[in-house]
Image (cartoon, rainbow, N blue to C red):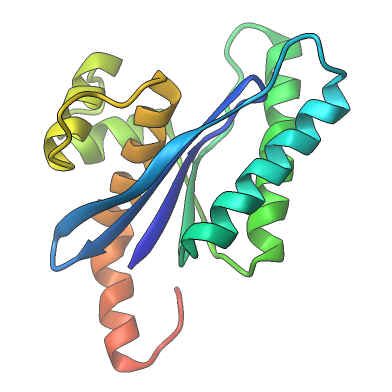
Length: 170
């Protein structure tokens, strides 16, 4: 199964694509879509959409795992992230890719086994699970790979069973 993990944003959108089979991970590709602060916001959204569409077309993922949006402190930031997340979801929907959402606590639990792990622990465990020489940079990319791992640990085996029986996604 090929999974695209996304850490949404509008300045940096981390993405990571993994193949998952037999409880083994194989990184396919990963990186980030970056936009410049001085560019009009609608153009930044277009760059995010275009970048993610290109990743989808090039890597052909079967599912997309993305962080659920939650409000922290800055209302302006959360609105912008929500809008960027919207164009990412649109790109996936247009490609016919099922979307799965996870909270930060679910990611921490799935990757480290501890729902209150710190970011550095999640990133290091992501590096270890994927047999990477270093934690991917920027941090958003490592977070996106952790998102893909979360899908695999929480849904991957069940989806593989359905696929073997000829049944579609849950």
